[in-house]
Image (cartoon, rainbow, N blue to C red; front, top):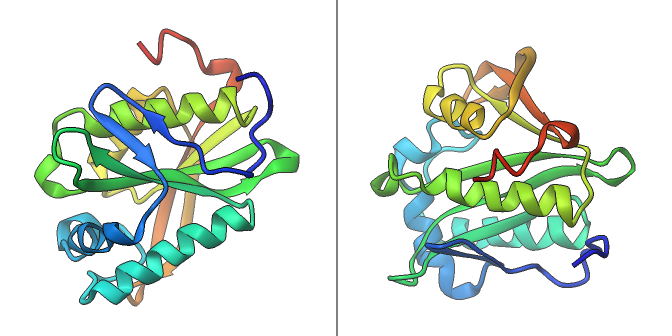
Length: 191
């Protein structure tokens, strides 16, 4: 595909172990289980989910950002089990600046297995090659060292620290900002 991605149809991507696809109603239970886990949402802006309805609302948000052309959120489906074990995607897409922000989460039962690196590399490749992005950013709480290690393995460079940038869970949180530029993206990174 050499044409610029146009948000007309949600793209399905694949990695050796996972299918990255649009959310479906049948994913509600898996998404609920994901976001009901305190460990998963520890560095997110919301508290653990307490109902499947919250998962359905989250999926409506995924639909909305796609319709508004401000983001894409892929469900990470394990090929072997068919279970959704996380999500990954782009938000705050600014077409005129060829820039977006990368976000991701993964069920704690699957941490430490190289899954998010595999998935994120696929999505980063889509961003640079199909969306023709110039810059992909990631904003991470400094205490989230696992996420920082991942983003550095993906080739991102820290650009700075946004002090008390967001108000979450009744406290102000700092966000370290990382970025990967099109000019820094190479086939070596995705190998």
